[in-house]
Length: 316
Image (cartoon, rainbow, N blue to C red; front, side, top):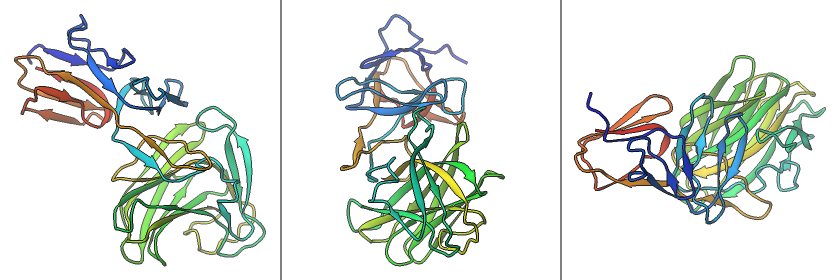
């Protein structure tokens, strides 16, 4: 293998810049831009927000790894306002679901996660829900996600719903760490689903799906003692979970968490990391955190790092 002309292994950075390790004299360091804040997972496993409106601070993330990755993402908007305020009246408590705010430590290390509990009604309507507006009344790709921690009961159900019974469902079983998804009605189809372990009993569940042409997406959550969708009968009157950080975003993949306040959606700006390609380069290999690779042989004058969790970039 030829000696690298340029190598980036994420470790050092400052405002506007990510350092290359080859060359190490600063002549081929990468320029970094992101107009605003973003979240990452720190080395201790906690989520933190870094960067302000003018900082252009790169995000090195340690999610489920001992080595940092450079997190590069397109712009995304969390359309779910009150993403951490499930006790707010905007979140509908169907039947006798109860929400108690700030009961356990969230994935940020702060006491901001809420307890969601079924009540004495053993019917089909024990759930928590809220609706968000899409960018338009057309079919599109979207992703709904939430952080969940087990309380009592082995199951947790979630749903993203459009018009009528058009919807995707997910049922997570804590004891087996399995997440089963399905689609009902027309228009909605499941593209992918994911379970991410954030430690301390926290899991981020996500479903990526295609929507129908309704102007809204309704998110529904239900703690369950037995398996089943959110509106299936469950005889449990004591099942509960802890929830934190709901996100409803348009796009074909899950992205890093974006906190929203009580009155507005929030958009995270795109990460752009680039460098003028050195002369003589014939191949660029990007290695991602899951060890998949992307090889570029049509060499650009200015190379821009691809979206994903980047473990290293080698130019030869």
